[in-house]
Figure 1 (cartoon, helix red, strand yellow):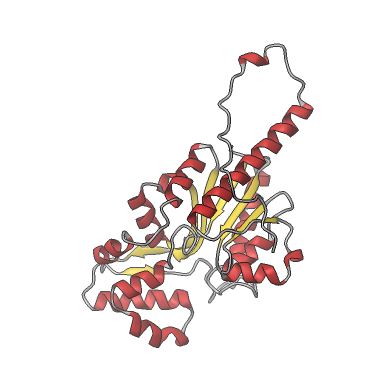
Figure 2 (cartoon, helix red, strand yellow):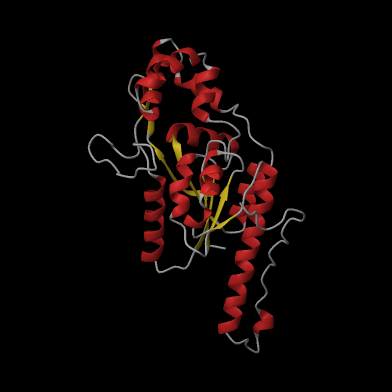
Length: 278
């Protein structure tokens, strides 16, 4: 199923929390965070907070231990592993940071499931402090998108992924899964043959609901990890069935096709309707 690209947001999509807020709260830095919040962009604030936490004697190991306890729905990891096993090209586009994401994925044993992680750089400097930098350097080269925060336009990242796929000469369909307002811009970049899975009653759902005609992709809402798993595999099954049907319509069967045995795709999970109308 290399013809299916599944792009996940991270916070409140793969995780059931915002990883930035989780670390700040668990390391008892919430009051300072709230005090500084109105004074700078979120990405810059997280870099500042990592400096403050380090100055209070907290180590990078303390941060990592907190990250390993993030709440998740129990069906998310099995869903990711199963989609990877089926051959889907899994990627992450997130406004978190590389250190948070990679620490969590390695702890869960699923980092190898993703071919690409697009996020803000996060690294440990020579003093042992976590630095968090913007994906787009908005001080030197602003991305110019009015829909997105200054440090990251996810829409531009999706366009780059689409461009690379075209350059490879491959035909792929995309499923985009997200929850936040930053997931609205990339949803608008998807094609008619693609799918967007916005989390119900979260900011991206509300934005899409205001004017759904602005999107070309089909919209399928989800509410929790079980929902996400069921709908994702229903869409994977739908895409695969359509692709197999198209292939069969242009390639006549050969006399020895009975010798070409392929493992059948698992049937889609029951119950939830295929498409959610908003």
